[in-house]
Length: 407
Image (tube, rainbow, N blue to C red; front, side, top):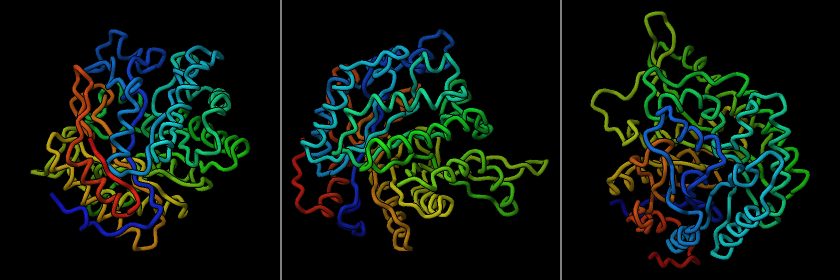
C-alpha cells in the first residue's frame, strides 16, 4: 500500500471529502421515478434499491466514520422526491431531516457540499414530462425555494444537478444498464439537455439572490475522450453533445464539479464516424467493466479547465469499483498524483471528494463496490476499509489539527 505521506502536499484549506447520493444510500425512496422503474415489472434493472444501506437512519454512523478518519468535508444529496412527494406538497419533516444532516456534519467538523438533484426525481415530475417539459425549471426552482431552511448561512457549496450529461441519456441507461453500453454513450436527448441547462441557470440565479454566500455549480461526468490517430476531429464532434455543452454551460458558475473514473477511447468506424473502442486488449478492468486508468483524473481536470474558461474546479467524484481494497488505494494514489500535477500547471482545484463513502446501490446492482466503508447487506453494520484510513492520512497531513479516531 502506498504511504500516504508520499502523496504531494495539497494546499491548506483544500476540501477533502467523500460523496454519496440519497437514493443510493437512504433506502425506500418510494416516491421517486427510479423506484418506479425498479418495480414496474419491466425487468430492466438487475436489483431494486430496497433498503439501500439504511442511511436514512444511520447517517450519523456514516459521518462519524468520515470525520473520525480525518476528513473535513462531506458531499451528500437532498432527495427531491422525499421533500415534495406529491406535486406542491412539501414535507416539513423531511426538510427538518436534511437540516439535521447539515447540523450533524457541522458538529463533526465536516463542511457539507449539498447536491440538490442526484439523478432521481419525484415520479409526478417525470410523469408530467420531466426535464423536457417547457416549465421544468419552474418546478425545480420552486423546490429549491422550499429548501431555504436547509440552505442557511453555514452551507457554502451547493451542486444544483449531478451529471446532467448522464441524466440526459437516462432513458438509454435504464434500458441497457450503466455498465453495459456496447455501442458507446448515446447522444443526450436534446430537449432534456436544454431543459437541464435552463433549470441550472435558473437555479443559479435564484440561489445567488436568496443565499448570497452560496457558491453554486454543477457536476459533469468527464468521459475523457481520447482520440486514436486520425480521429481527433470526429472525437471533438462526438464530445460536443455528450460533455462539452454542459461544461460550457458552467462558465458563469462559482465552481464546476469534475467526476472522473476512466477514459473513453475514440476511433473511426468504416464510414469515418466516431465510435467508442472500449478498453485496450489485455487492460485491467474494474467491476463496472471500465478500464483501470488513474491518470484519467488529470486529463479530465485539464479538459474541464479549458472548456469552462478556467473557473474553480472541485473533484466531486473519483473512485474505482473493486473488491480489492489495495487496488483502490493504488488507483487513488495515482489519481491524486495526476491531480497534483495538473494543479502545478496552474489549474485551480479546490477539493477532492472520493466516490463513495460507503458501498451502496449502483443504479441497478449492489455488485460494484466503490466504498471506503463496507456495509453488511443484512445487518447494515459498517466496517471501515484500510483505504478510509489511508486517504484520511492524506487529509490529516494537510490538516494537522484534525484528530483521527477511526472505528
